[in-house]
Image 1 (cartoon, rainbow, N blue to C red):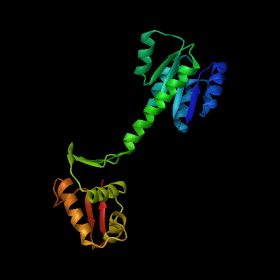
Image 2 (cartoon, rainbow, N blue to C red):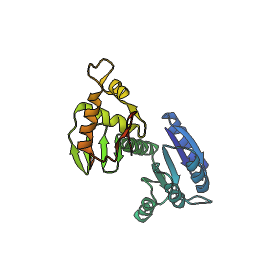
Image 3 (cartoon, rainbow, N blue to C red):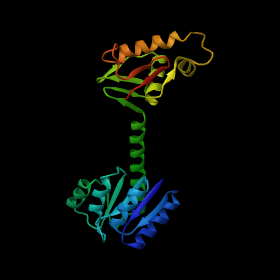
Image 4 (cartoon, rainbow, N blue to C red):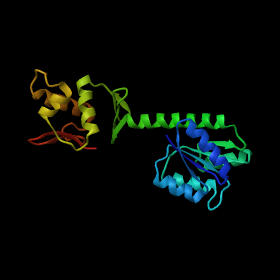
Length: 225
């Protein structure tokens, strides 16, 4: 995990960097808000620790600018403890807030919590395939159309998941048979046609004029997102 630490107190930055690197994090440092924004734009950090009071650009403004292009978790540091300051930080897009002086163990705990939360969000996003009113939850192997769960057989699900994960890629009936049913399946290619027809009946608003499960005449089938 790569973390950016931003504070104009270089001694504090050095201490945070030392402790986080001992935890196995890769840590980079900056000492003003403008540099923080540029680094956040150029580098894919997993988390940013951002002080409020800094030269060039204060932490709140830096947080606002980072939020224009990134959802990276941000912990704000401040010497003030008033609720109004914390609320202002959250309104700028911060995910957490820590008042100086703080216990390094508390900072580490908050970092771990934010990284776990971010990882959970990424998994949820990665497990969802969506096209128009149709979506698949690949972890639960569930298809949903217009907010309603659609019952699919195991092979129907395998087939639509393959197509949705590879939009616009045309698969021949032979390729689909080999991938979804396996090379040793004894059936013929008409099995693919039957499953495509059933998928259209279940997932398309008008099976006769499908919007997603498309035919490439003379070649095979593909998914149009």
